[in-house]
Length: 339
Image 1 (cartoon, rainbow, N blue to C red):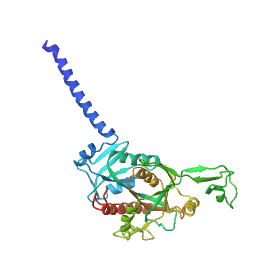
Image 2: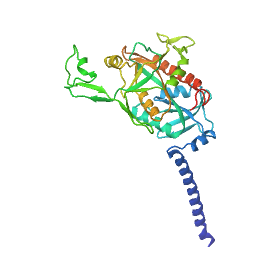
Image 3: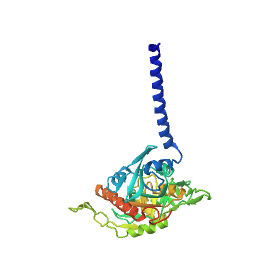
């Protein structure tokens, strides 16, 4: 009888171990699949409920530059959370609680990744930085643009080839002279902004938070990096980069290199730079009714067709520098603003 009972006891032990493992897995997955796991996750991270500045980037170059800059200090409790294919890096910059995420470069991914950030933790504001292409003489290589607004300019109503009402008339770009074109014309469509308890709004230009722009203005005159090798002053830009306030950003799922279209955006919409993510971050931030700001460093000129490894490196370095200094100015809650 004793020998016959041994397998049953072993089976019971194995089942008990399996149940414990499943319970642990279920507990972990439950934490990461709750619609808004705060305060559980926040307590696990810092022992109490905190709010974070969300640092949203759309490229590995920007993410690596910030995480390896020496300014980002990972949390000793939970340094990151992996969710929906993205890593949300949790820590501090200049003693300010932040969470850093690379959401990806395409507009759908940017919107999704930014919204997951809002659902995951308590976010008191969004800082979005990275590189961009200039379509204006006011922005040179290495400059950091801090726009007042940004728009989706890839959201078109493509009109019939008999319509003359579209702002973008393809016949205007015929060579050697303007004329009719079977592509007709296109107009830029507004996007709907939805916020809790309010009627939806149709907007072309999405405004950047005015209070945060006022704080950012204190960065005027900040010295930016001009040479890849600052010690020996080699691999330098031809110009001295600066922070340029105001202007407008143009966002579309298009990597723009066409000078004619770049000039059109500048002349008809007063756009100063183009990128593939800023308006998506803006829309998610405005929907969640939190302040946001954009720092886009110029890595190439669409009009002049200039770019290179030096300008790309310096654009990344300068956007990181400006973002870090802005975080220092904002500080923790109750230091500058009360949310």
